[in-house]
Image 1 (tube, helix red, strand yellow):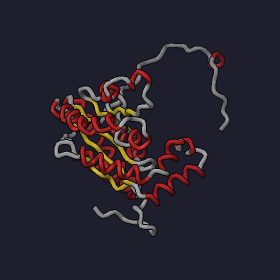
Image 2: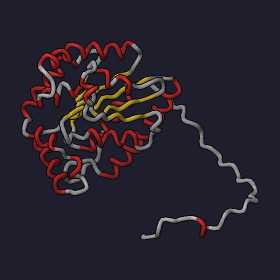
Image 3: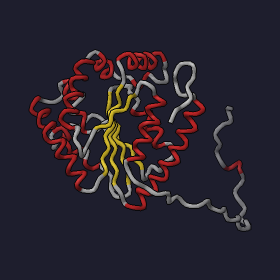
Image 4: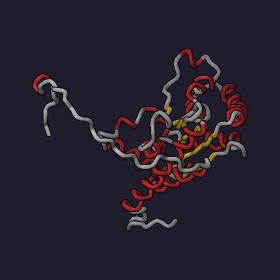
Length: 265
């Protein structure tokens, strides 16, 4: 659908927020269908730093039930995890029946940051490229719905977002030394991404690329596409009626017996 634009060529904020709200209502319907039918949905979000993965994940989960829609964002592997089968640390976080799991970065770390930064050997990297499609086919054959998104951001837009984070103390925590080092290895990351797609973009487990220079468009496009990946019906409950409160003959302790947060505002 054609969205109204502002004088900078961006989607108008009011229209964006209204459309986002509509899509979020659909996400609640999808959530209830997945829970009711016992489906298992796994969504992988990958892309360069500051590409907008976290932003779309936040909008997906804003009104959903965290017991149904879970976010997995694993940290640096422990010494023990480094000795495991590579995919082993991710398997416990895969969805059970009635769950949607959103991976904010995933097993594809090996094809990206580990490859570019030298955190894995060439043999480990080559084995990942061989084994990853087989691993994902196993998930799909088990009945899991697997959706993979790559958020694509331009060099110029990434630089603008990085600078915005540097200038904003509230966002500065989002930049790590690893992010800054990755910035200086733009070409290596491009090469690693292209090789990753060559080996893991298959008919049964395709990559979907999200043009992410425009955050509003990226969020709407990604959520709308995700909703198309699972056929669902609206089984949300009808409006509830609040029952009247029964008579209360209980005498509560005095308020002076409680500690209240000071009213500073």
